[in-house]
Image 1 (tube, helix red, strand yellow):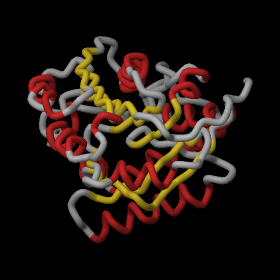
Image 2 (tube, helix red, strand yellow):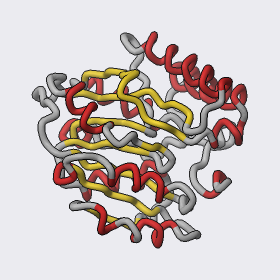
Image 3 (cartoon, rainbow, N blue to C red):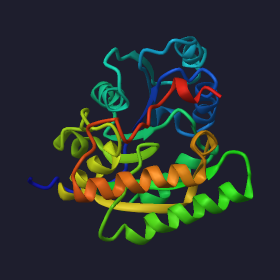
Image 4 (cartoon, helix red, strand yellow):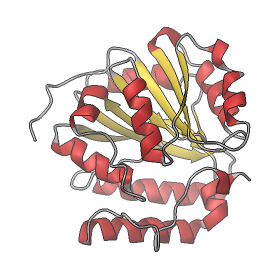
Length: 255
């Protein structure tokens, strides 16, 4: 696959948020985004993926807080389908895929722009700290990100909860594979780096994340699921069936 000419972050960013039954979290996500500086350089795209609750209504409550805002309804169910739809509808040259339970500190994008200004074709992941401090959650997160940082040189592990990428590079590789049920972000990251992307992990600036996955599956259970998926992808290829890797998003997490 031909490489993409180097591109640095100097323009606006389209922030794409897939949402499925996220009425409890999406308002806080949007509030955090509304506090970012340089709103003219930010486009907010929320992709409602057949929500059965008040997600769309909650999103509409925030539309007047942004200069560039879209609420899109994607009827094809799936987080990759929602992310790809948002990317197709975006107007800026950079994409930031954000999960609907990731919260940005008020000065995050200002610091982030300075951090990555001169890094061509950057594909980026940043540290996720627990939204509510818990020492065990905190240590678990530090351990996981230490592993991801350690292996980044030979095995870039992208994470769809926060995934920054130039739009032309994302389009070149065809976006997320919509047939993959777990690890679609990692698989997409592998293709992005092969196409010329420069993968980096930053511990600062950081974002905050809801610990709901940890509460639902437990720390060991979540680690085991991710580890099994990681080795399956390396040994057998992408994961297309949910029989042994059940990892849905949305309504099951409405805690």
